[in-house]
Length: 410
Image (tube, rainbow, N blue to C red):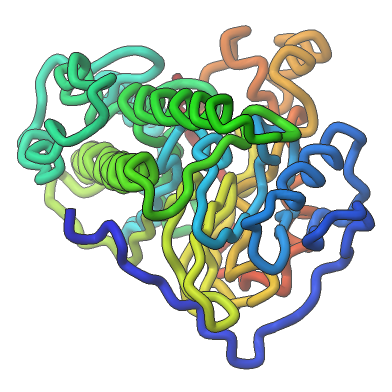
């Protein structure tokens, strides 16, 4: 595929400012943190494991929403030379956000929000569901012609990948209708590469682990098994990674196209409108970029690229504010920012700690599910988004603050 080795350059200029804390972890490479607090024991060990890998470049950067992940912390930015860790990218390859600013104002929403939600839930499959009818924008995606070149372990699920193009998924994936301080209506959604991205990731993670065993490579965590640049395994993973990232981006585009049509039907009498601003960004991915005048592989595991002028999306929890931002190109963060509020507690702990009444109270005034199936997504399970934003004022500037009026979850 043509764009596999595109190189992104972060222009340093005078935007190098240090984070609030350089962690004392006794690692070969430093760990810089924007979290504003000390890491817990398990988090510190995970950061230590990653920073001790021999191919880590300069330092590891932790974003304000950092929390436990698999292999590497969610909220990590890891630049590497001549190697990449598949599990650090994660299994939801290309997961990210899409947002559109419409020409509509909030007064047009009166009496229509529930109808929009009902139409969305009918038009966009959520959870494990798939599309029954595949639209042209999904059918005509050019990536389908490269499917035959992907890992042999996914060749039997091409039909599923085809049917899931334009579907949301579950967990913390969502579709939201929002309003900004000027009463402009925004459309926003969060999703990734669905089942096919997960399968591709699992195939390559297992290969990396097998290679580590064969080579008797000593790793602090088996999930830090890696591929060396130039090897056949690296090339195969990089090819599949880029394909899955492109799938995820187009998946969001397909859903946003349906979302816009529904909103245009209800708010504009069916007449198609032109977006005033559209943003589509990954926050679980890897790219080849230039930092500190060197070409490196940058893995953002729960982080958004924030070069000078880059638009990004930082969502809060269901019931909290979200932010459209513009990057400041901070070199110390590898030109990155947080990807959201970040979890304060695990899904199981949230279910045990809160009641249905708590969920209803914390999502008051928002048209959304209010049942035990989404209790793990209760706002109190996440860090306060205002604190997260305050901790990264040197990474991004706020373009718009959005409040949700409707949320669809899987």
